[in-house]
Image (cartoon, rainbow, N blue to C red; front, side, top):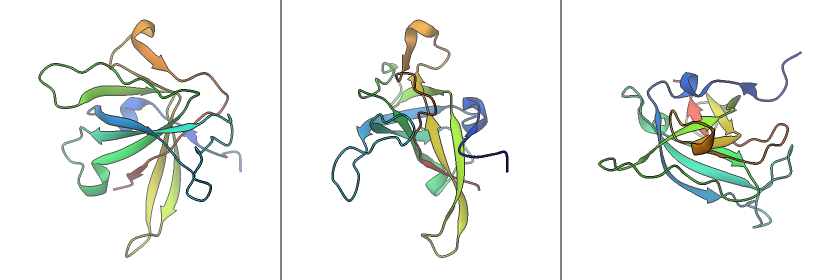
Length: 145
């Protein structure tokens, strides 16, 4: 099959109503207790906790993690006065479908990856990109619905 690995996808396809970042934290390997490394780039992985602004999203669909491979912790956009969360966009997103069989019945879920974090509508100067690395990525799950 010609399709292997994660599939490129636009931010607006994944989050058509926008997204809000709650925070970012390093991802630790469960067995070794060391930072988890991206298999393609070799860079440490960081999880950005995100709330999907889609009014139809419910339960597990509302809160997702987007993983970003970067040498240093990605910087989130500045807070916006009057909003409880930080509006955020992800650059160079990709999605990897998988079967989540941790519940009562298996379902299709998606691992979300991005190469950078930026202010919505921001230009290059406002962008907070992770260092470029071929195939750098991260994941979070978003229900197939």
